[in-house]
Length: 321
Image (tube, rainbow, N blue to C red; front, side, top):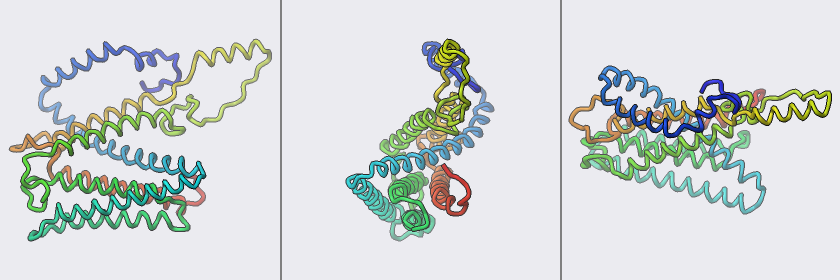
């Protein structure tokens, strides 16, 4: 699907149609997976670890885009009730973030145990949330409290997700140290987040004006020269030709890339980021690898958000979208 620019391309019909063939091919591929040698699975596992990291990065970028779009949509209404709504949602998110962080101290810092690493993760999350608000409200920074509060809640969730993925025998995992596996609610929430991220990324792929849309798309923002017509008939013919060759609204190659990365992430989520587990195959998304993946995702989220606030201030001559 690389290079599909208009709907006259034969591959455009492959993208939108042929569902019976696609379903049959999908079932055959699933059956084929059971007959592949372990070497192939190991290679795919290695590739999936990198692909999952890219998908998590895409998730963060999508979240940042969503929060800024949400904030701009309410600010553009320029009505008092929407400003009150912005303040209420922002305050609610911050209350939720700090309340949740307080609960993490109770769940993952049990008394009588030295849980310095867990305390460090939780304190860092609270410091980041506080820092987001301070920087966003600084007079020299063109920020807003709503994105800061939403990112704070997301960071608190990532911290909880990381701590809850600690090994079940770890004494500092006070919430799950006696459990045999991840709760159904936690697993469903994680998978639901993944599915929603994939769907939203597909929607954003269709509405992007620069990165995701092909150059021929009307959404790409590329300038076009005015058509020169010698006669009215010539103009009508050209207009008819353009109507027949309508450009695609989003990049098909990026669309499939997102779904491929999401499938890699789902596989890593269900296998605990490794296919070589022993004695704990019933556990899903548990282990120190899962912990550090989520903690690193939280920190990357914080860095990207702070960069979105400080970059226009550090580089005033550049235009940021």
